[in-house]
Image (cartoon, rainbow, N blue to C red; front, top):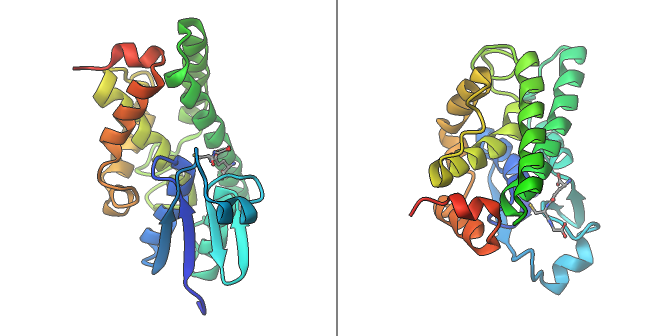
Length: 221
Ligand SMILES: N[C@@H](CCC(=O)N[C@@H](CS)C(=O)NCC(=O)O)C(=O)O
């Protein structure tokens, strides 16, 4: 690799974390710059096409969209973390995209003050998890015993589900045992634990409290 990669991040963002996991799993040296996404600097607004993190600077070029960044990092640092078989790889990519929909339902589930809306979002999350349960290999990771790109895409979601369980007692994985086992295997990996700032569990609790949504009423102590 000729140039050092630079990831632009927001500490709480699960999408940025996907790319960080791939970079760490592959032992790639990279820079990370944190911004406050609710008050982004001018230089960020100028270079981020959607005004979202993650973006990745590659020399003078800018990449956006977490899974695209994941794929780019994987492609320039062979061997790939994707399965070799084209069909298995295509299916993995489809289920990676499915994971983004779960993250998009989880955020309003915990932040809306409206109990009915929160319950509706929770039902969406649980229904999607049961679909995922049906297609999971039953092995340590999604496709079997090898950690892959799809595992990097889902680990940030499981980390946040674990924070929710830890801080509110709500266990989103209680009806999906393969998901619970998968989560445990992913969260035990050093490169997953080291893909976030150490204070993230407390930041997540602070976010639940500050957003004052329905899940704030469930916070322990
Ligand atoms: N589809 C995007 C989603 C990224 C995303 O939603 N990032 C959030 C932070 S976690 C963001 O930048 N939000 C600011 C905004 O949408 O204005 C991806 O996968 O990279």
